[in-house]
Length: 469
View (cartoon, rainbow, N blue to C red):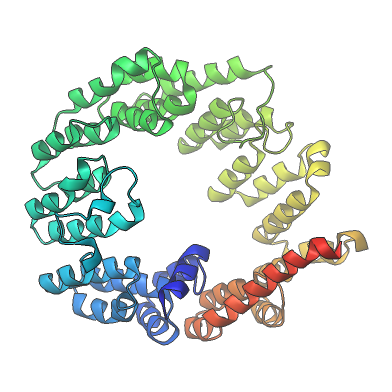
């Protein structure tokens, strides 16, 4: 185990994946995660196991799990290890572990090369991490002293706000933020200190005058207004900039018991969009052409009015996929509400143009829904009957899913064990977990070394393909 190996795991979500870890945790397999961390060097297993152990008051055991990872010097493991040590009451050990190294000088006395906007922000991260441990240990003023030299240059301001939250130092934080144009950070501190009105005023004039605000700042402002019940301000802004303000406005109305008013707003917006050109394909949920219909569909579904929810989305089903088409969100919504038969009916009724545009998408979703509707055997027959030119869609992972749904789980296991498909090991592990065989799932999962070798082979093949063509 070394830093490069851990970087690879984190970057590619490799090894035993976060999804597999969640599945194991859901079945009470914390000890199995600990074993995988110790024996296989699995970072995501270690991370989850440490958090579970700390939550259970077993911080000493958590430290022993993460210690080999932290000793590599990899910062994510160092921070997690320091948290376990703090929870164990071993404050000085935690601070020693996370302390910036000697090349970065003493905390509060930065090296000249780390000052100013030319500094490498990556090199400053250890100071923020060190300050966070100080704050967690109750030494908040020391934490601020560590960060203050960098805040003068506008660096580590986010870290300053984060580590001081709920620690009674908001006035000092506001003083340090004062010289900077960090509107969102100032508003965060004002809001948490009970001065929401002042936080809103930081944005109101510029937004009203359409002066430049970043998208992130506008999203924060929308949430701020919603959290403090500013209905009329949100109403005006939602009409002008629905991409940012519509959803918070509708959600606020619903939370206030004014769902019928929210419904009327969405109906009006959907009617206004009818007859306009669909969007550019940037995404069905956020496309201006379907934004109101998407919100209306979900609002009606939350009220149990599924028929009306589907009808609200239906006018978009004739659009090309991605151009304001809400067919896929409608299918997922029906499935989530326990109506896979209805979802399959919607899919089977999609436009011929859409089916021609992306037949693989239509088929894969059809087979998934058939499996969920108790028609897995029929779906397998459809796959077996595919013409030769579509044989690439006959994937082992799809067939294994259908075999499991058809009550033939062992056949699915054997199919996936012998499959060379990229996703087969992952699907096999999840299947074994569902079958109550979690240790078999972990022990049979490809090692980190094997996964890296396979990834290297795939990249080599991709590099060779253009030359071969």
